[in-house]
Amino acid sequence: MSTATIMSVCNNDCSDCCDGTSDKSENCRKITTTVLEPCVPLPLSDEVLDDILPKAKDYALLHGAGMRYKASYDQDTLQMAPFFLLPSAFPRREFERVVKLQPLINVLMHKIAHNHEFLENCLKKTVKVDDFTGRLWKIYTTVREEGMAQWVSLGMFRCDYLYSVPSQSAQQVEINTIASSFGALSSRIVLMHRYVLGELRRPDLLPHLPENNALSGLCSGMVLAWEAYKCPKSVILFVIEDVTYNICDQRFHEFEIRRQRPELHVIRRNLTQISQTGQLTDDKRLIIDGDEVAVVYFRAGYEPGHYHSEAEWEARLTIERSRAIKSPSIQCHLAGTKKVQQEIARPGILKKFLPDSEAELVSNLFTGLYTLDLGAEGDAAIRMATEDPERFVLKPQREGGGNNFYGDEIRTVLEKMKDSSEREAYILMDRIRPPVQHNYLVRPHESVKLVEVVSELGIFGVVLGTDKEITINTYSGHMLRTKPSSVNEGGVAAGLGALDSVFLFD
Image 1 (cartoon, rainbow, N blue to C red):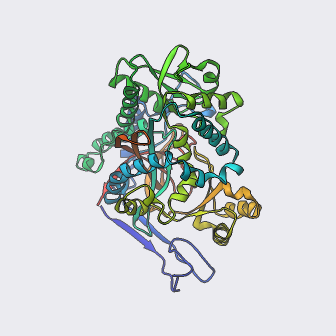
Image 2 (cartoon, one colour):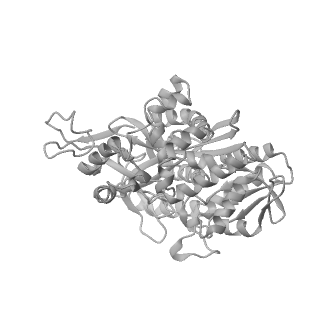
Image 3 (spheres, rainbow, N blue to C red):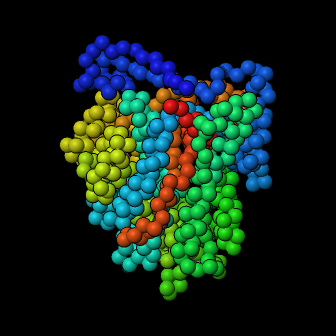
């Protein structure tokens, strides 16, 4: 498999005004587009498409690649999750590189979470202007001053990457430390793509699809944390949204935990329910409806909308005060904020947490990240962004997708807050320019479409330990989300992106 490159030529000396990926001035125009070849020749004939499409849909549905949708929510009904008919191309060299580096990322984030001075220096301005981060910080400082009841923490991370055409390497989009989803459904989609390639009479292509054990890897982390708690009758608590649309991904985690340890029970509660029935014993054991909780797995709690009132904030504080092992702990949640990720990209910072050789390897994953703090450095970043907003992404301290600003929106937002401390709630990141390719987008109740797409790779990692010792540190699978190239953000649950799997090429 090869790539085809279509390039317009810039006749100017662009070294000072252009990064090779976007317009920088009226005197400089350079656009580079790399088009990856699909795994099989496209378009498929109508006859082949009519045959394979219902088979793929049935395979996805019958193997649990389903969701519930806001527009037509029914607790008794599942619909097919959006997916791409074929696996999408990703360079083998870069896939293997980020897989190999995931244990280093695990160690880095674990150490950052347990370094109070660094967290405080990173977030001291942000917590004053961003109410949500400020509330999380207040919980952290409260339990720290009271004395942590549980120093063991479970990190289940997902590092997201885009392959960058200009650098010819995978570059990190973000690190997710809370509610890293789609470990289960991504494992299902890989199996569906193996089936599809077989039905297309191309079993020779199957070695290009790497195994994906994300579900078993993540659940193994929770089981090991439960064992570390050393209470055989205790349970694992999933903290969930009021209404769960991505139900299959969550339930498959429960089912896999039961498969690994038949005697282990999982209970599901939202923050409101925990506020009503959760309590702490004198020795800080967390009790929910009579069950002692060993491990808390947050699939909610990462955005302001999950906290309807002070009751939900009190529930989060109760959890953090407890002896239960959290994924993530409050300090690990804070370590995943955009501001911390921007600060660790500063020269020399990684060497505070990793040996020099490892720090260099991790630093090569970063694209440009810039502070917007009041001062000369932040002013320079704002000038860059307002002069050429297409080169950047503006990010607030939020998770869950759909929160970032692009293009002219960046200029509008920054013009409004350039003289205000409000800007310190945001960071600026270079926009990564990925290659495009073509694939068939399959959505429920819509005709299949052959569209131009880009793909974002997620790498899962699990780390378990205290501030002094790490006992478990593993790469734990991967996922691929793909979206039309015309869409800025590709959330699957939002219907903008779709599930996919990796087709490796050399």
